[in-house]
Length: 236
Image 1 (cartoon, rainbow, N blue to C red):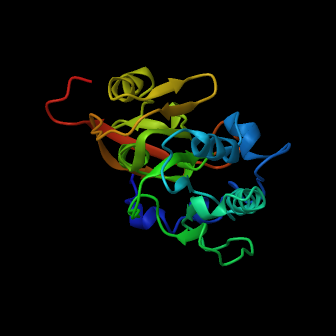
Image 2: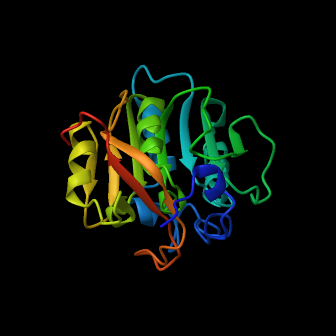
Image 3: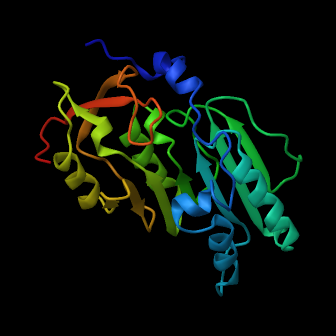
């Protein structure tokens, strides 16, 4: 089976035309608050209340779709009177963002999350059903761990069934051990990976390429399978 590199995958109809986060709001029935189990605005305002809080508290949403939730969060923080102390940023491969005000506490960036690099650290990083459309999923998690502030929080949807070994078999539990040893948590029922502190991470898997013909994942939307093999010398 031919595998796609990330540049080729970025042009795939599965990735570019995915319905992921196109209509998802910040709160309500179809929302980030429902998917994550918390409202990102609540997380940011809680950090602001901590003694010795930084001058600016920041949330980064990877694969933000239209950015609707990010835009709504920026508005809510402004209404709460704390916009001068926050930054809300969304990154997505497709430049199809909802209309948004040009204000310093909101950034919407068109870029691949695999190659994009931030200019700061973040107190909260999320990816709501975004990694399903990324080839190098594990590299994104490695890099995002290093983008957190000390004590920062990372939450992302990750379906281990989409991580495949060189021969095409699901990596499953063999893969989950590496992130746990590197300081991540994994909830198999919710298919969610998390981390509660910054760290320099190198997972024991080498990326081989992606398959965009995998068909629907557990969300019902067409998804991508990412293929890996163990790094040389790794026992994970």
